[in-house]
Image (cartoon, rainbow, N blue to C red; front, side, top):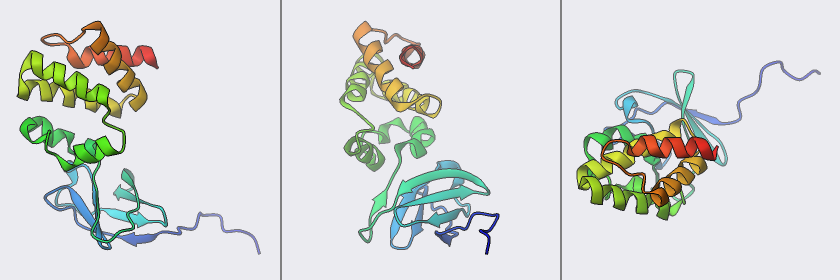
Length: 174
């Protein structure tokens, strides 16, 4: 008997609604999705080691599957649009703590953020950092981190070109 022409889906399908915290519940755990999906139903395929979230047929999130009951996995990138409007919530965000523990928010990020806050003040310095973090959507994380380090060493933080300086250095690193 020949193999089927179409791939066979091995994961389990769920269709949860995104809550007001930009999270979905799958089995006993919670996972973040982009804030633009709040209130919408999404399609989730749960595999043995990961889960994939789709809005219509477009993949919008991918997370390592949580095993312990009642756990939560948050991706800082999913919250950046909300945090740029409320930068005061950034420093205490659970998503930031998880990004730090996963090594995605490094000491270089912290050093750059401290310098940006010193130059611009708490609110605007945090907004500048969030603009830099948005670069990860277009550029590889390692290149953005290298751009942060280079911009920091070069003293490239200015009154209006912070994210631009990091983007330039990140592109050079690529």
